[in-house]
Image (cartoon, rainbow, N blue to C red; front, side, top):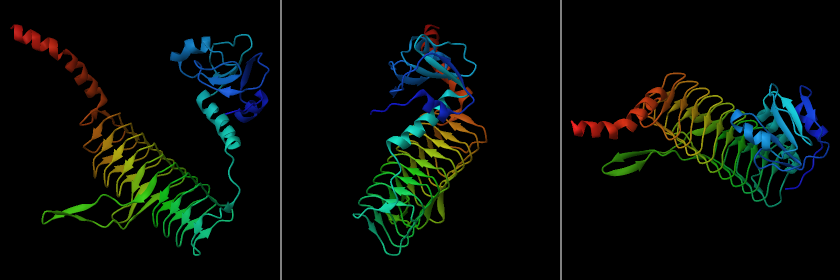
Length: 338
């Protein structure tokens, strides 16, 4: 990937509240970590554990915290800013729009759009998309091979990546980003045992997402048995996450890769579910709680809980028990000697 940006361009993106020190006067030709950067690259420093990488880096321009006491070497420039990671995100967002500009509005000739569908004049419908009966699409951008089921709605500013499926009557909020291959509105996993057989329970509800929701590649969100499965404003869902029917997720939650939320569970605002973790059905996870990696919540949690393990328990208890387990071999040896 080739690009070249002047330091002035970068400073314009970051804003005026910045201190510049150093003598680098070329163009920025790439972006890399401190350890991997070469001359001409821009990097960033925000954790003290990377101090040695900062002191040795070949990066020409480095974003550093405003109160950092480090100085650039000859041929380097340091940009002293508030929250270097966030400033880097702003830079990358501007460059992302240059690398992959928003397509011009229009409908690709290979797309199928049902005559009853209502498509904004500012929308883009990409190659081989299928837009079914009664669909409403705002000023959104749909890449190739996207399927939008009957009666579904997609809000303004949504970006739908290739091979996404939005099921019938589901509602996608404004400025959502649905990444490659995710499925919104697949059937909920509902069965009842009768006379030795598993009888399917029809899933006739929908999925609804609020504004500014991101859903990662190959994640699945099941439609409700009745009513709706709901994803709250600003929630971010990683790749390969499963959310079952009638789950309700609050605002600004984070669900990390391979997490699974069972049916009818409720996650209140600002909940974090770390990688490979799960929540069993019909539980409520209180706001500002964190479920650590590879943990399973089998009971509801009060607000501000921080749990680990299986079954999930307060992290202080988890680490205390972990420490004690490390001592068990020696304790058994002493006991045997008695």
